[in-house]
Image (cartoon, rainbow, N blue to C red; front, top):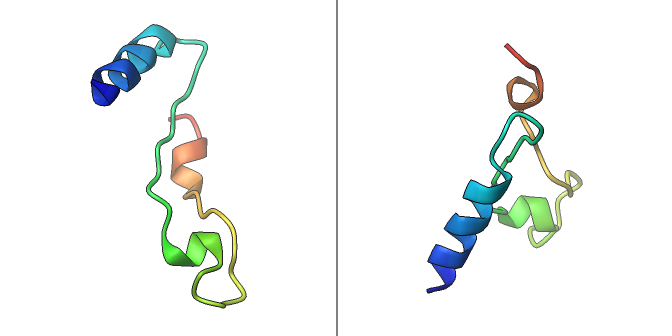
Length: 50
């Protein structure tokens, strides 16, 4: 049921006015590894319009 609610929400907002980027958080993203690169990594190709 939860997945269908999420799927319906995505379908509602999916149009020309929105960009949806979904990323599974890694341990490095959350700081769990103790590394210095804490924070989300979003590839530049995902942000640039083609």
